[in-house]
Every structure is written in structure tokens, then in C-alpha cells.
Length: 291
Image (cartoon, rainbow, N blue to C red):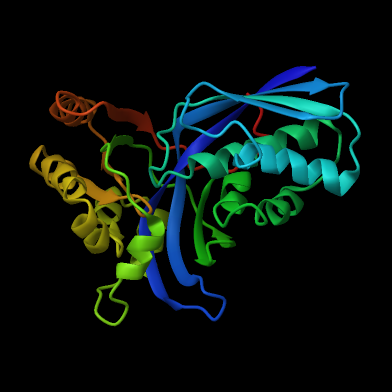
């Protein structure tokens, strides 16, 4: 048996860091939603008791360090599955981009194997397993649009934002999330209007959403990788309705309802950087996640 499952990227409409936790993590509050930039996860059941993994990009680990592998391993271990699975990841989401590419692959494997192994787990049960892999995995299990708190695992689902184009641009710059968190000035930062953003989404107020896009990690990332700031400035210059960095970067995205403006933003960046995408917001929660 072989099936293909979709693994969409997420973006942060807001990202706030409220302080340092006793466990060493940071307390966050952020609004996340899914976009139609997605990996494709091909799952094939094996009679042999093993997990095989293959990726179409060489710089993604094809071993136990891959989140998708870890998802399969956790399910096999928890339910004493004595057969195996072959996982092929058709990678479309940029790597180390602030778009939860590894987390969404893991989530797709959890949803997919739950179906193919007939485990009968709820999304909540899958999300709890996914938390052992990473803080973004629970959100990716559900999909949709949510306010995430705690380490990012405490989810409150809200309405889907109004339809629009999302133009994403990732510079080749590598950024270390650990270094960015270490550079945050927690006592000297402005905070996103999270409540206002929730209200704007509930009211389908596109302009209100664009005005409230904010990510407290931007100053630290811009200092470590100035080219990320340059991308944001160019998108604003090209007339984006709203622009902000996703996660800890280095991807910056813009929202627009205009087909012509989306094309202009894309063309304005594509001439000097490779990873530029124009996609739609998804924002709806999963039922099974199967294509």
C-alpha cells in the first residue's frame, strides 16, 4: 500500500516572546496559519520491520535525525508495530526557513501512518505524540489557524483569515534560532497587538491584519543577517500590503489580495534570489490530511 500526504508550511502572522521559562525555553504567544507551499510525503508500507527514508534534497538528513523518521519511530514503538514503512519526502518547502518544514513533514507522517496502520488516533492524540519531536509539530498535525502559547504547543484555534496571496522570499543566509533567542532584548521590545490581530481575523479585516503583522525576533535576526532586512525593505518598496518575517527567519513574506501586485512582488525579487514563491493562504484544519 502506498499513499501520498500533503505537508503544508506555516507562517507567523504575529510572534511574541513573553519571557524565559524555568525549563530553559521561552514563553511565546504567536498566531500561525498554513499556506499552500507544501512538501509531499510518500508512504509505502513494508513487510520488513524497518523505517527507510529518502529525500529529494541532499542537505536534508535521510536518517534518524529527520523529524519524519522520528514520527514513524514513535508510532511504531508506542503501538508495537512489527512491520515497516518507506518514507519519501518530496521537498518543496525551503530548509531552515522559519516555515516549520521539518515539523510539518513529521505531522504528515503521523496523520498518514495513523490512517495506513489503522491506529484510530485522534488529532489530539497525534499532536501529543508530535510534541515529543518539536514544539511546532502539534500545530502542523491540526493545520488551520491558531494562537499558540507556552512553547508553541498550547493551541487555541480561530477563524481562517480572508483569502489572499502570500509571497515568500528566503535568502540563502543561515540563521541560528538559538543565537537569535540569545540576542533578544526581553526588557526592551515592542509587542505585537495579538488581541487586535485575532479580532481582525475574526472580522475578516484584511487591512487590519496587514497593519498588525509583527515579529519580535526581527531586530535580532536583522542584526545577525542584514540581508533579511533588505528583503523586507524591498517587499515594502514594491508595494506589499503587509510584510513580516516568519519564525526566526530568514524567510520574509508579504500578503496581498491583488494578482497583479503578487506578480510584481515575485518579479521584483526573483531576479536576484532563487527561493521566491507565490501561494495562497490555506488556514483550514485537517480532517485526514490525505491528498
